[in-house]
Length: 308
Image (tube, rainbow, N blue to C red):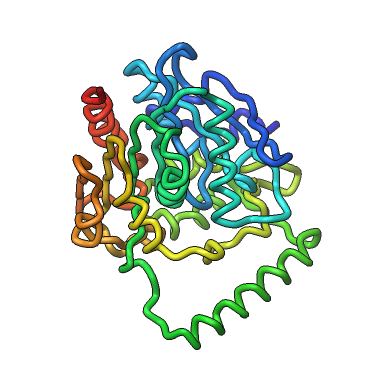
């Protein structure tokens, strides 16, 4: 365990009230919970290269309003097991396993970024899992896809598959480079340029391991920024249009945020399901629930308060 003087705190951040795990296809997925275990449930799904402790400020705000908040680490992220296979579809199956193990009844689902897009795909196949769906900047559109011809796409596919197979072959050699808390926070800053250094340093102490050489992110070193496998962003928009349940979408308008989908309001509005609500905020970045947690929590709570 790291010494107390190496830990960090952050205003409003609260560790989970309970921890545990969920099984999915033989993998242990780490589970964190906030709030009264007898309260109505809302499940939160994090984005790519994040983990459930990124909800440490936002989740307690929802829990304190009378909800049981549950969130799990995706395979290869946070405290969940590393896997031999990583793909968009594998994550979707894990989310289904988590939701069905937590509740026999429909629950409220919330997804950020990649997690929001994956829940769109899951709910297209299993709409009965949710009584309502909240999507935080996880609405990829046609605008998000690169405009390339079929020949180049085939070339990219071959190169991507070759690179993925090579990384998998070398997985026992791969390790994440150790650093100090400050150094690891600085290396993450280009992904989260609108988030404070205080938050990033706190995130290191809940999302990285400390050993004799320093701090290392827990994320499987096989994982790297890039594509999600056989998936196209426009597929998710078709699934959004087919939703038949209360929906709240919150879209960031900051187009230069490196981790954002860069979808625009006009890309999403034609696909809104009947009665769906879309909030557009051009002054909040992609990590909106971290950048403005109180504002986003109030939007979510207002939506939840109007559920039948």
